[in-house]
Amino acid sequence: MLRTFLRSKIHSATVTEANVEYMGSLSIDEDLLDLAGLQEYEQVHIANVTNGERLTTYAIKAPRGSRTIGANGAAAHLVREGDKVIIFCYGQYDEKDLEEYSPRLVFVNDQNDPIPGPRKEQHAQIL
Image (cartoon, rainbow, N blue to C red; front, side, top):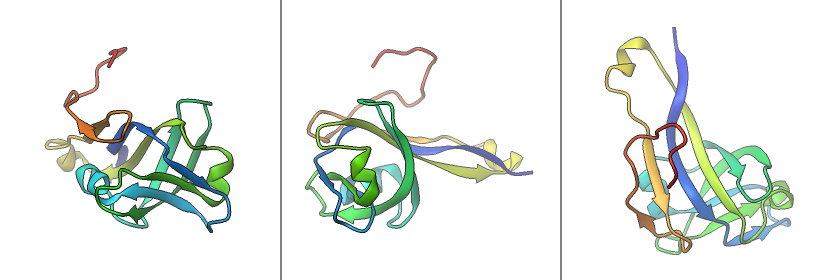
């Protein structure tokens, strides 16, 4: 039996651009994609901390080092420039995979630069 668990997340990213005219997706700095273990065109979920909206889309590469987090297409109606978001994805694991399971947690500052964070989330932990 496969079970679905958090595979990775980018926590507290700041949206740097929102473009309704683009055909869709979420632009993410290639450095952050690598840290989170995300691939271009992989499905991602977005939780908008600023307004409570949640949506599903896919990731595309933004230039490495740009620290871009860009909401494109319809997502730009729900995620606006300056909003704080959590970007996450899930993976499916069998019982054997879970013996070595650990999600990749990426924490960023207000400029979307990677910063140290906990290796494991704890209940009601304040960051």
